[in-house]
View 1: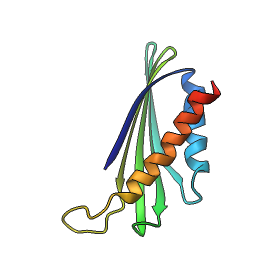
View 2: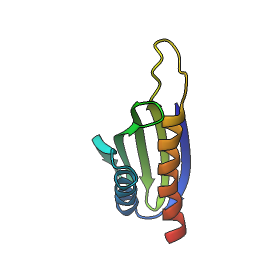
View 3: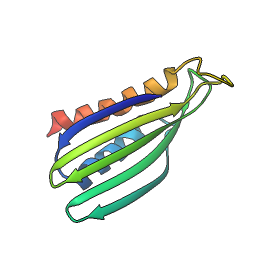
View 4: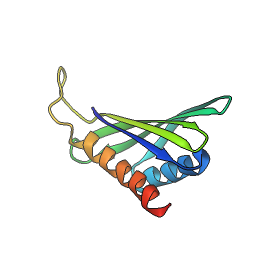
Length: 114
């Protein structure tokens, strides 16, 4: 499992679309699995789950993306999982780390393009 958390600023919907497009455009095998949204006053939360095939592990890895927003203050949490072919413990986490690194690049583009 690999994890990344970041505080950002900007428009919630615009950033969520930037992230979604960047994840799907970052890998030919990336797919959107499902998502959920909730708004409570000025606080908004979006949860998204993505998958992609990892050539390193020969299996699929997933990324759970949670975006929390209050006005232009954003908090992002990404947790990747999967990819190991072991039965009782993880042998490698290359696929998870690579998927997460690709998503981090999407976040960094947001920060430099603002």
